[in-house]
Image 1 (spheres, one colour):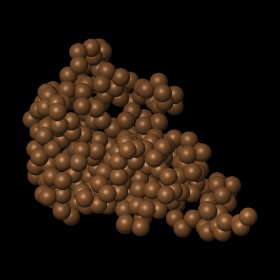
Image 2 (cartoon, rainbow, N blue to C red):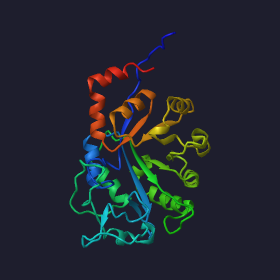
Image 3 (cartoon, helix red, strand yellow):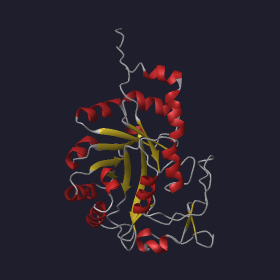
Length: 287
C-alpha cells in the first residue's frame, strides 16, 4: 500500500472567543470581552438583537433568558418576554453577570451589569486597543415567522446600515447570520461588508448558498467540518469558521483539516494548546 505524503500545516486557525470567553465569564459582557482581548484572541464573536425602539442590543437570545438575567431587584424571571417587545431602557433594567452557567464550572460571576448596546460594546473594545483583533464576528438572529421575537430581515438590515455609518469599527466586522434573507438585504445595502452564512444543517449545499449570497465565510458546527468540505470551500475562496469547539481532540482535528477559525468558549486554553510541543509536532505532519 502506498504511503500518503505529508505536508506541514501552513497556518494555525484563528482563535475566536465565543461570546467573549463564555467558559470563564458571563457571555456577551464587557468583562468577557476584556478577558478575551487580554488572552490575545484573533477575533471576538458575539450576538445582537433588536429592541422595541430599534436599539441594537448585545445578547444571544431573543427572549429574556432566566439562566442569564435577574430582575433589577435581584429576583428570578418567570414570565417569558422577547427582547423585541421591550425598549432598550427596559432591557437595561435587568441584571446580567450574577448568574453562572452550570455547564461551565470555571465560569465566575461579575459585578452587576446590564445588557450592553452594540455601540457601547464597540466603544469598549476600541478603548482597549486590541491591536491583534482582526475581526468582530457579529451574529444577527431573525425568525421570520415570529414578529414578536424579531423584526423582518429587511427592517433589521435597514437599522444596521444606518448604524454602520456612525461606528467606524463596525465597518470591519464580519456580519453573520443563519437567515438567508437578512444576508441578502444587508449585502444590498452594504456591499463592502464581509458576510458569513451560519448553518448546522446537513442536508443542504452550504457552499452553493454562500456563493449565491456572496458570503466570504461559512460558519458551521464542528460535526460538519470535514476535510473535503473545507478544501472545497477554500477552492472557491470561502473561509471556514467552526463552532463551538471546546476540547483538545476537536481542536487538533479541526486544525489538521484546515479550518480558518475555531470558535471556542476557552480562548486562553486553545492558545496554550497550540503552544504545546507535542501539538506543534503533530501539526507539522498534516495528511
